[in-house]
Every structure is written in structure tokens, then in C-alpha cells.
Length: 369
Ligand code: GDP
Image (cartoon, rainbow, N blue to C red; front, top):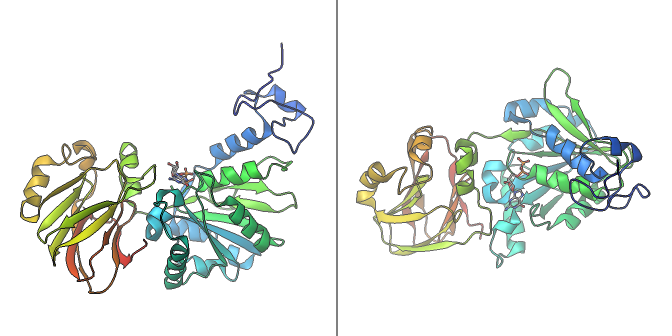
């Protein structure tokens, strides 16, 4: 039988000569099925080993020793769900080890975004959470942006340490690790998975050429993120795939916006002003009168006001109303974890309310954009 010429994974021409060049396959690997290049092999193994997730308590227990080790920590967060995906209390258990904050999904923000201002904003939020970062890097794992800077920062900070990658679920950690794996193409060893003693939790160890490792830890499940609450089929309605198209609404007090059947915004009191919704464009926004909003919801939930479809809707917790007084002279976002945010553009102050399933994190913050 003839040996395959091309990698069954990525289609690249296979070669057995140069470990450092694309398409490399060790001689013995021709006996494996499917026949794939070394790079694809690692990524495939990684993906099979990396699906574990844990809650924050388990996670902190799991990594409780890191503070005593000499480690570099890459904390990856989702820019779209920043407050929902930041690991609070991270500082306590990393000790004096340096933390690089990789802020992923930057591709979701409009092109006109002022990135310097954004970096300041991120620094401010980290400070409030007591998190000291040696570097904040904006990346897009999907668009392959920001990696040169991230890898530079890792090289600068790493010294003789292992690199721990930590993050919540769905922040793009796998996508990032896959990128790191395919970037470190001079690897000679295979990925190994290891269990922490006394637990069943896997980490994935990616060997670096100097004998140290990148250690991928289980993703943390945070119950307050909308993306954890909805059914798989509704995930794309909450998690935007493409650059957000901000939707601007000029509203009078007493008007309401529905975000499909996933949430609701009431403009309770204030002068006529505009509000900008940063949510997935797959989610339809319906404008109505506040006084009619309850009955509209009862009549149209799961149908006109969807997703979620009615059978999914019944699995979500009851809606809870959160009221906020936006003070005069500030630029504020109403943030809904995993669903996006609404920017209050006016500076005259307003009373507003958000309705989402009980447990979803809702808060106000200085405007991101
Ligand atoms: P993990 O759970 O942290 O390992 O996250 P994944 O790597 O599986 O990604 C979770 C979801 O986020 C997937 O739907 C990815 O397509 C998406 N995603 C990952 N990175 C990016 C990114 O840079 N931009 C955007 N828009 N989506 C991303």
C-alpha cells in the first residue's frame, strides 16, 4: 500500500526530514490512523484532553500550590464578558508570581475602538479587583491577532518558569492553546495529560524546548454567565460570532426593549436620550411601551420574543428585575454577563431596570467604549 502524501488533518504535504518545518511527521506515525502531521496530532490530542471544567472552589483548590511555585500565569478573559469571566481572588493564590492578562475576542469590538483607552479601562477594572498584572494584551484567538505581543510578553516574563494558563469556560482558552501549540512547532515531545493527586482533574502539559511546560488548567464554570445558563442551541444568540454592530435607540421614559426572549431593558425615568446596545446581532430587539411590556412578554415569549424557544425558556430561572439609578455626568454601561451591555449615552441621569433570569450577573460600570 502507498503511504499518504498529505496530512489528513490540515492537508499539508508530509515530510519526515525537518522537525522544525511544516508537515513534519515522524516515521513511526505513518502506522497510526489517521495519518496526520505532528502539529495536527498535538492539537487533536489536546482537544481530546482539554474538555474538563470545574467550579471556582475546585479550581482554587486545584491550583492552591501555584503561589509557592515559580510560575508565570496567563489569565485569559473574554472581552465581551469581562466581569463575568475575570477570576476574582486570583491574586491571592498566585502569590508573587507575575500575571499576564490576555483579553480575548477583541475582534468583537468595532474597528473604531480606542485601544489605548481600552487598555486603561482594563487596568482600572483589574485594580478594583485587586489583580496586579505585569501586562495586559488584547488578542483575538479567532482572527489570530495580538499573538506576537502575547508571545513576546511570555518570553520576557517567563525566565525559568512553567506557564499556567487559567480562565473561565468559553473564553477561548482552547483556541489560544491550539495557537500556542502550533506556534511552538519546534516541540519534540508529545502532549501529556496529568492528574492532580487526589483529584480526577486533568491538566494538559505542553512541553517547551527548555524542559518547562505550558500547563493548561480546567475551565472554570461561573454560574452567573448567561452563556452557562442557556441551551447549546441558544449559545450563538448570546455569544456573538462577529464584530458587534452597536444598535442605538432614542428613547423616552416609559419605553422598553426586549432582547429576543433573553432579557429586557426598561427606561423608567429621565429625559429623552439614547442608549446603545452591544449584543449579538442574531438577537432581535423589540421596542415597546413599559406599561405593555409584562403582557407582551406573557403573550409572545418563546415565539416573537425568542430565542429561547418556549421549551428552553421554561428551563431558565424566573426573571429578576434589577433597578439602577445612573447619576448625572457619568458614562455608564449596564452590563449583563454573557449577553453584552447597554451604554447609557445621556449624561443627565436616568433610572433604568434590567430583567434577566435570576442568577445572571448584572452590574453598572464606567463605559467600555
Ligand atoms: P474555551 O472553553 O475557553 O476553551 O473556549 P473555546 O476556545 O472553545 O472558545 C469558545 C467559543 O468562543 C467558541 O465558540 C469560539 O469560536 C469562540 N472564540 C474563541 N476565541 C475567539 C475570538 O478571538 N473571537 C471570537 N469572536 N470568538 C472566539
